[in-house]
Picture 1 (cartoon, rainbow, N blue to C red):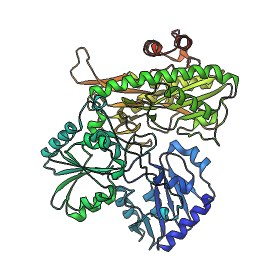
Picture 2 (cartoon, rainbow, N blue to C red):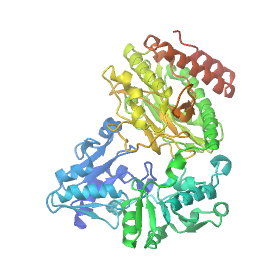
Picture 3 (cartoon, rainbow, N blue to C red):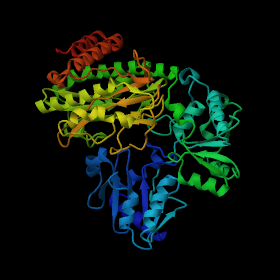
Picture 4 (spheres, helix red, strand yellow):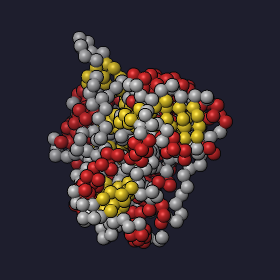
Length: 599
């Protein structure tokens, strides 16, 4: 089908043949993943939208695409407004939109392997109030009209060595079994791909930039587990690694296995297990314990080996980024550098370490107006040159066996305007406020979010994304349950108390549509802090990312003495940690751009 209009028409015809009035198209897979394999990119195939979060609803005469504030500009560039209504979330939910637009007697289809039970219940309620019905489909109608739909990845699993994991799979499963015993639970379903990878100390290559494998797992109270994965994806090394404590089955056997839990108590995660899993357990007569997968929190709280791996991988990654920034400082003013050529050159610098396994996401390489799109994704078609007196923003990261990185730097090619320096300095002040925060154990990320926004708010400004997300250990660059975000910003569903050992991003920003964007992002690890005379257990942040912050964009007159000390101290650390990894010319350049600010 040559056009997105043709695809929309074909879907409407397919829905009509199934006697459905509409259909909901989320951007996820059977594991509620944020990033999904090519086979699950149904939203992109149908609409052209290339963002990493969104959904759509198709009705006989209407179609709507739902995105949050990160994609306000991008969705309008990529999706035809003649055929699609743009709807902003969380201002309007899909359930609310369906309740407003469905007629009495309407039958709205959904794929129960692509939605949570909570979503199903809310949509059912909204439709019932209009006399309409939510209908689970046996097969996804988009798959029926997608003629060249990719097959799921056939990549083999690999062993994630204990020297990187810091704990064996048997030890992790025993910890889970002990926790289940305390709750008198028989088993726990692991549906999230990163939970399975972490628990079994395996990795995969089934999702771009996220080293996970398409599988399901069930961990039992005796510390054994069942892994459901395509047999061709396993080799002898992985089987030996898993040992007798893990039984391996075909992935297609998973649903049938759920039918065997009659009379058993089974944990199923309401955020990570799809509606179909809950329904299968209900049909089996199991007692469902609706709570977080037992791998989620232990995975988020890094052990000492994982934390050291994060430090080591960030030094390696920081050296690659500094080499890139030095190269950019020389080449961009000459002309000829484009967004896509810059992103490719940065990847080449990362690859020189010979330890890079993948990028942790497609680099956000944005010049001028494209920098104002928080999750801009450069393509051959969209790429523009880097021009003088223009801001360039690059948000990128790498996947290494010992850690996952994610860093954003904003630089000026030429000379900034006074407004650019003002906005950049306000973002920097917010970044420093969060980096230096000290807070009691039990604090949630939502309580810290305003630390980073306060200086923008003073000028009547804000940014429409969270301030920080969790990061995995050679796993997802976005990891729950920790995050730093207030309730009125996208992605704020997680509000887990912050624990020592968690890794998060610190990334406030500012975006002026059509002109420029600014973001300063470092990763930080939570650590305990000793306070003289203090009585409470206190926490703070250890900075993991080391790369220069562009002096030309800083208005030092806006900084307090303490903030100037932080910038100077941070840059001294950058030179000390990254300098030894550099050639002489790059090291000399780094010394110049990290010279102390005058107070």
